Structures are given as structure tokens and as C-alpha cells.
Length: 234
View 1 (cartoon, helix red, strand yellow):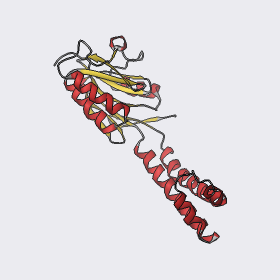
View 2 (cartoon, helix red, strand yellow):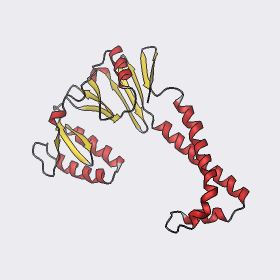
View 3 (cartoon, helix red, strand yellow):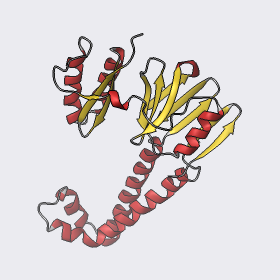
View 4 (cartoon, one colour):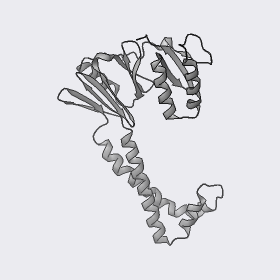
């Protein structure tokens, strides 16, 4: 997806183009309404498929008059589109780069980092990572913007951009229970986090990742597997 970055005083913002938000707010509700309209033509066929979920709702829809059925279907589709649009807007990434700090916001993820703490920034595997001077990760979030524009914004404000990706990739090891070389307590946290990873429990994953960071352990996930390396001690 293309991006734009605009200088505001001493700040450069890297985000989706301004038209993307209105496009979501208009396009998704319209698409939802169209889907609801199409549903009115196949609802009786769906009721005939006993394995299809939400049969009770579809049966209620068939009991309505054609006019009321159309109104309900359009309204439901429109509402669904609005909800999806608001969710999409909430999940859009916004990166603010300034002389003194860099901020990353996406959904509930919100980080603001002092320039003095940042040693470098890279994008790899569709994620942006901000590294600290102890080789720890200060921020790690899904990235779907233009990496060239991000690089330009970082260089403009004097941050270290790492075009080759993670300089510590070779240090990562796949975690197995009882792995050697980890600090005391880290194996137990990684075991708990593996369970959360298998269940896709985002809240527990983030909480346990913070516990590992406090133990100077950096963790990356791939295909429901954990890979770890050590950061330098404080």
C-alpha cells in the first residue's frame, strides 16, 4: 500500500494516504449493504442447508415480508460495514518521527521512544523493529507501509536506518523446553508463552514478551514457534 509522509514542524509522519480512511468509511458500508441485498435472494436456499450456521437468524428473516426483509438485510450489512471500517481505521499504522523521539501507533499498540535510546530501525518479515543500544528491541509491530519513505523520514531526522534488516538474525535459536543459555526463569516464561502462541492469545503473548524483555531475552515468532536470542545486560 502506498504511503505519504508530511513534515509538521520538526516532525515527519509516515502513514497511509489521507484518502484511505474515507475510502474505508464509504466503501465497506456500501459493500456490506450490497452483501445484505444479495442475501435476500439466497436466504431461503441457506435455510435449506441445515449445516449452515446461524440457522435461527436466517429462519427469522424468511418470516418477514419482502420489503421488511430487504430493509433488515440492508441495515445489517451497512452496520457490519461500518464496524469493519472502524476496525480497519483503528488498525492502521502511524509512525511519527521527530528530532527527539519516534512514535509508533497501531490499534492498541502505542510506543513513544526517546531518540537517545534508539540505536537503529529496520523492517523485516513485514514488521518494523526499533533496536536499543543493548541490542534489545524497544518496539516491534506489523508494518505495511512504504519502507523507502520510512527510511527517508528516519534519515531526515538522523536516526540509524538498517537497510539490510536485523543485524542479529544469525543469533536467534529455536526455543525448546529446557534450552541452555537462557537466564533463570526464562524457560518457564517461554513455556507459558508457547501455550499462548498456540491459542493465539494476544494479551498473554504481549505480557509474557514484556517479562522476557526484562530478562534480556528477545523473542520472534514464526509458524507458532519461538526463536530467541539474548540482549546485553543493563
